[in-house]
Amino acid sequence: MEPKAAAPITIDDVRAAARAIQGQVERTPTRHSDTLSRITGADIHLKFENLQYTASFKERGALNKLLSLSEDERKRGVAAMSAGNHAQGVAYHAGRLGIPATIVMPESTPFVKVKHTKDFGARVVLEGATLSESFARAQQITKDEGLVFVHPYDDPMVIAGQGTVALEMLADAEEPLDTLVVPIGGGGLISGIAIAAKAINPNIQIFGVQTRAYPSMYDAFKSANLPSAGQTIAEGIAVKDPGMVTREIVRSTVRDVLLVDEVQIEQALAELLEIEKTVVEGAGAAAYAAVLENKQLFAGRRVGVVLSGGNIDMRLLSNVILRELSREGRILTVEIQIEDRPGLLARVATLIGEAGGNILEVSHNRMMTDTPVKSAYLGMVVEARDQGHADEIRKALSDAGFTLRANG
Image (tube, rainbow, N blue to C red; front, side, top):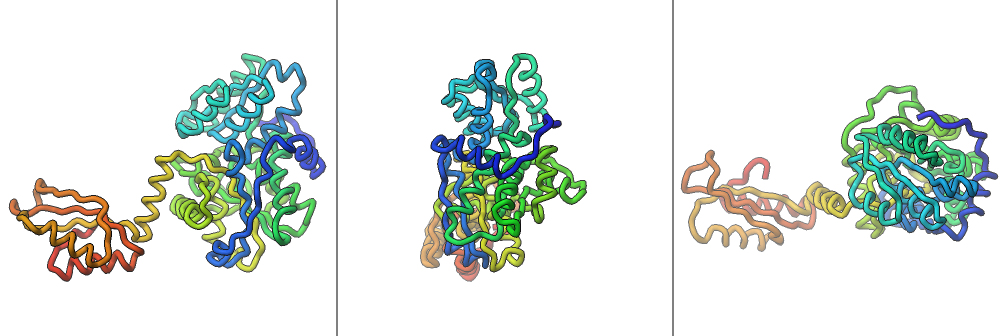
């Protein structure tokens, strides 16, 4: 994705963006978290960009770019390529400003992001298996229809808009921050933040975070060659080709780029939901996941963590919660071989109840061909307090003479 030639971006550009967008986007809160600080050993300050109207930081850069257009460009309209959050930011503010918008989105984009983009009045084109394929289609539409292309990250006006996050964080934090941890997709957010933060405090350390499935900026930063492919819960940062402008900014301003895997992102997402009572998407949880997985690196530091967005499909969120409860032993599945006769289900239920478990689901399978014909498998989903309690429930069943399947 080759960008147009761009002038260097400075903190003056970021401050100009802050003046331009003031009152049109949320000044989201920056809050200290006592509990997350205890868990990580760092002094954690969260920047809640998931509380923007479109639930993502992306509308900062999108609005700054739209406000820079001439009257003729506004009349012709804009095009954009996005997995969702940039799309919503462009669509929402283009609608507010009376600018026609066409958004090309990958075919795998979560339904909630497609719906919201359409609801803001944009024309949505679902095309491409990846962002790169969607980018090519968006470029073609831009050329064919004479539109202005609003790049999701490799545009000076967009980068400057995203940098306003840092101005707010550093001004609003209860105490001076010495470290910022920021998710990276194409690099627009971390580039803007790094430019602003380094100008204010040259000694501040900036860490970027990518999902291990899409380590494109990590590769550029470290001259590595890890593949970018596959499914990820953090589709908002699943970018195969980081920006050309942004990669140079990252190389010159960022301390390191860290990788997190899918389980780590899910655990961070669930922890933010349970402890901070805030909903974030996979990309929005990536920065906190990196702090969780690199406690020694951040121990004792005053760390600003950017929760970049909160657009997550409800079904996916439900699955993440259930998977995390299962990992923690708070929901366990047991399969018990029993004789197929009256009273045994009641006996098993009584044992689980006496052990303090709460039965959520029951299934009775008589068709298993690897058991005697007078036997059956009783499957149960049981709620427990934690992993230790789950082990106590299993032991109570085993001590009573019941045989649990190995995967139960």
